[in-house]
Length: 172
Image 1 (cartoon, one colour):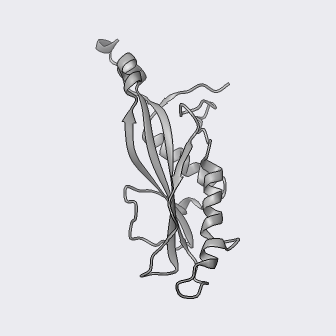
Image 2 (tube, one colour):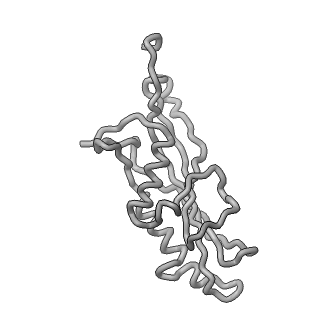
Image 3 (cartoon, one colour):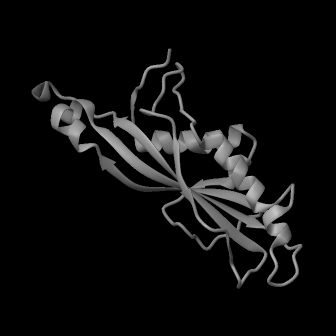
């Protein structure tokens, strides 16, 4: 049985990235970690994902009893799907939304399927999150009307993890 480990936010973000790659949703060069929710880049791919860390808050009730020994964090992470498909007539988005191979809605469904209830593990099979990843919401699909072949959809997830903090002899 897997046990919960203490970890770092960077480790969790890399695990989310690797999950999208392992599920063959994207090639490694198509999944980015970013602090920008809407970066002005279009890579040489028809679809790519941006993983954006948002607010991470401490569980106050847990802090009062455990402080550095047991710091529980609750955070949010957005996953943006940026997608390009130029098959639609102007101001129509039928294929961009529904194409079986390149449609944004089906790809977002695959992202949700890969990440909802996903529990990343370390090399020993121990969970690095307190609970599986939980979907909070998705936003409305949007098109970039200056570049109408491009658009995006975002899903926001909640993660809970314990910080791996160094404990000195003075703190023991």
